[in-house]
Amino acid sequence: MKNLFKLSLLSLAVVLAGCSDDDKKVIEEDVVVEGEIFGPFSTGSSQESHFAYFDLNTQSLLELTAEEAATNTEWDIAFKRTGVYLNEAQDTPVSVYFTGNNADFYDANGAAVVDTFVAATPDSELADYTAVTFADIPSDENMFVSDVTERILDGFYNYDFTTHVVTAADDKYFIVQSDDLFTKYSVTDLVQDGMAMTSVTLSVAVQDNTTEEFGETTDVVVDLTSCVAGESKYIDLDGQSVVTATAAYDLTIECADGGADFAIDLVDDASAIQDFTNAFSGVAVAAATHYGFQPNQYTVRAFSENNWYAYNLQSGHKLWSQYGVYIVKTGEQYFKIQFTSYYDAEGTSGSYSLRADELTSD
Image (cartoon, rainbow, N blue to C red; front, side):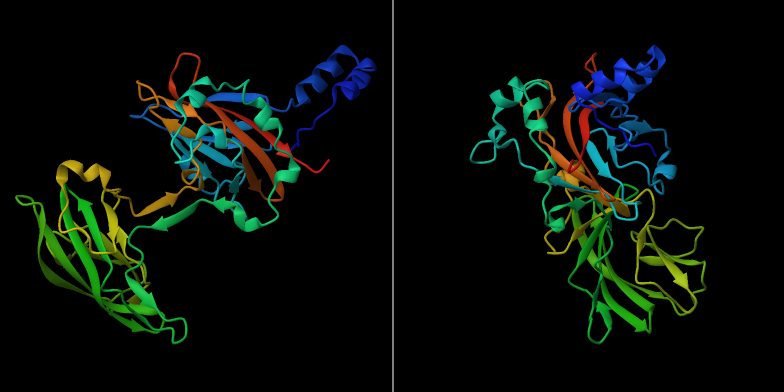
């Protein structure tokens, strides 16, 4: 992959003096001006959103499907509506460090200073961007944070690192939303045989939709001793039973020969939350979207810790950039980025513009 390079104005003038017109055009196209804005890159509408995959090394978008992007190692950072994602498929996952350059955008209590946000422009915040140099890269690599893919139903067992014994974490609860129904369960018993799970017992309670409370629990015992690699066991939560693959079900346990791995999976159209403090006696159906239900696998985004924007500072549900400067580590390279807009010239949302430049010791 070609690395873009920078020339000073003086060096460029000297080089161009001895070049033909065609040579000058090629050189001028390769010159990178620090702080140049790239974009806007559309991520679709809220009803039909899609990822935009950006390669920091070439400062350009890559045309990839979501399936291709899952294993592609060229892209570094991706955008989808308000979400910013880092590539986990590279040999070393891409990570990010927030420089905290824009403290004046927030007051002592951490609240957004509206006038500062509204007055800021790409031009007014360029100096903040160019001020970040190679010297600002933290020497402690632990200050860089990567995206992490989690499984929402993990945490149902305890593992003793000394004895290597696995036991049920019966005080950890999960609430599942599936087919407009809510159920709550914990794993109350687990039988281990070597590296496999040969039996697991779920204590399942179904929500009474007339009172929005979970009812009495019923134990569902899943015998895994008959497991055959390539097959699965199926659990219908609202039916509180083990079922066949042709029936309606909410959870699956993938088999190995004579047992199963220590994992429970949600079906694609279901979602769940972890209620590890046993705080919920039921789900308020009208407010269910605010509970944070997640699919079987979900990504904890590094950018969520230091969001690049503030929301709804004035009327109109608009996003305002806080013009923070982030340092992104990809392989052995470091890049700084600054988001300048979430809108294109027509005001269409989900259209990212940003600055992006490599940081070198030169």
